[in-house]
Image (cartoon, rainbow, N blue to C red; front, side, top):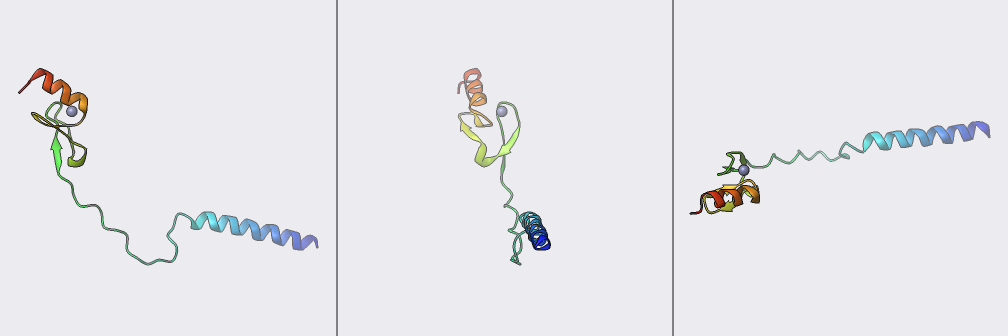
Length: 80
Ligand SMILES: [Zn+2]
């Protein structure tokens, strides 16, 4: 009876460790990883010159900006 309990405990431990180790890996599927995202156009902030992805750029009067603050300061300094 003592050995049965020990065996159960050991089995549980192995199960838990196995489950934990197996989690990060993908299960059984042999599908190739998705291709990397298509390269995105980089735009230059008209205020500070930093390059940022097009979908993060904020369009403004004098170009695109990295943040609303830069857009505001650019437009305040150089109203077109
Ligand atoms: Zn900026």
